[in-house]
Image 1 (cartoon, rainbow over the protein chains, first blue to last red):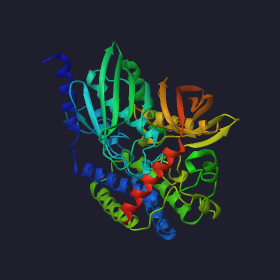
Image 2 (cartoon, helix red, strand yellow):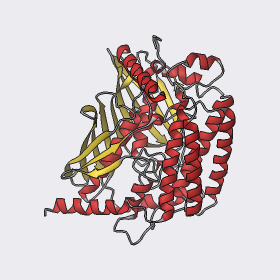
Image 3 (cartoon, one colour):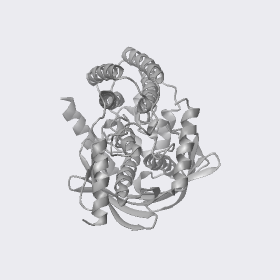
Length: 236
Length: 237
């Protein structure tokens, strides 16, 4: 097996290891996130009466207080038995685009495609609307960042987005299963170049190019320390 | 709908009618619920809450989603002017996934016009928007630029949809920090409007963007609205 195929296989094994919820609490957290997504989708479209919204707002505020009373997770160290790194587990559960436990995420479901390529499947509901019945252009751009950001990890030295260009070709429909394909086109030292397309059935809706830059280890450690400080300052 | 100026054509006018306007009645409660949901989302992703509590919350939310689904639906693109006149904040921008105070997905970004050809967005992203450690996900940086550049280009008249958007990431964009996204129109050429912007955390430049917007063909816009109405009619029955 080539070195590249080997790295891709390892990457996908670690990724797939993150997908099953590793505890009953995580399973419920994902279920709660799914229910939140449904509430968000209905809420933006609903003509619900004031009294009902008032009650719901009060209940939600109480629940928020209750959540705040629990200890918070640190990003790392959720499951030392998993072959996945803490960052990968976090990506699967907490990412605002692919994370099963994050109510912001549509979520995008990522699958391996062929060599150095992945496909993300996603259906956007009413809360993501930009032009009439279409996905907001900002979310189209964001989805590419997520899918290209995922595929470039197959290089073995994942980076952060350095540059991202989106070309919008036709409106991206809501309520339809979309297919976002991303692939690595080349690697030059610390730079990884990736490209992607977004289709609704046969229709090409958008294309993207991304440049990702692998951080040096000290830079990454500095970011982790800065993260701790920021979260500590929030009481989190 | 035969309105020659559908709401999406002038973001500025509708922005002024929407978030700047104090919500009353059901709209005020909807914004309050959305704000509480934003807070729950931020806390949920970081929380170590026990299983039983999460289960009870999920059960309650599933029931609430059913209940919400039972109400009549708003027609986002219709009756806007009537609702605005009635002191109702209106359906359009209050529902935006980036600026909408009634949409729990929105951070939300607040946008103001600066000068004749510029707009500044201010926003503070919480923990649910994290990408790199302690930093805003690059996807939300791109999305925020799309929104603020989109507002700026509408000031030129002849506003349109995003054609091309390029983001250059200069330094990590911090969470829990007031960010400023300063955008302006660079020029126009027939149906194209060029705009660019920069995102700052204090004095630090985090990202730059440039975009080309293509003015919307009224026929295309109308066709999208018609398609949307057909879908709404189909899902109501």
